[in-house]
Length: 314
Image 1 (cartoon, rainbow, N blue to C red):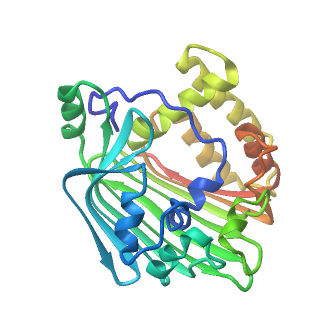
Image 2 (image 1 turned 60 degrees about the horizontal axis):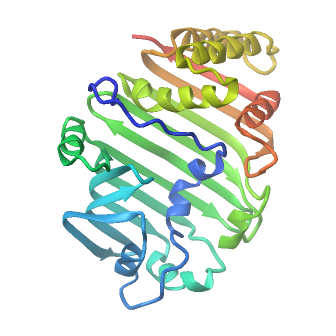
């Protein structure tokens, strides 16, 4: 997105674990764990967080089973943040759970919803003019997602965590995961506690992929190959993926899906149109093991997943 708008993003490394992304709506309900209990848990949660900062018109309010923040800045690292017009987080008895955070609640909410309106990537530098130009030139994005959790059998359903930008497209992720039965909040941090049964990625690309995914892919390939040339690294990654895909048996991916995925890979780094990828696992894939790096995790997924793909290029 930023590349299309003439803005060069700061280089960033990618997270090598899938769990934080898949559990984002759930994890947001428990961040940070150091907040002190008080009569206004939403305000205390925000004020005690080092990652949420004030913008002009900043305000915090409590909703029924939730919290709302207007005109905030989510600081993702020392040089980059996300300003937003309004963010809402709701969950099953969420306000009461926030009050019990210092004692680490012994149960997880059975449902939750997240919505963010007017999000813009915001550089945090010593040059106010550059910060302003980089922010104002962007078309704002909306983010939404929800989850349902059944503690009796540990089933967690992430329902379309979606990013939408009217100018450059949309992307979403859905997933079905298994947690320990009757899991507590601390179970999320246990080694190998989370298993992935199904994941679905959807993309309507009009520049979103190039602006948000390609910089991370380029950084990842530099780590993997040691090459200083990002184009060379991406080409190597693409060729490796094509070779691995062509070797997959028909029982794992049908001919139509294989053709669609090959076309998508060949179109990188500029895929156009509508892309959907479904990965299903007969035995849940453990996504929380520190023994697996990103490449090993991808190999483990390809070794056991049944793959379905659709791709309609513009």
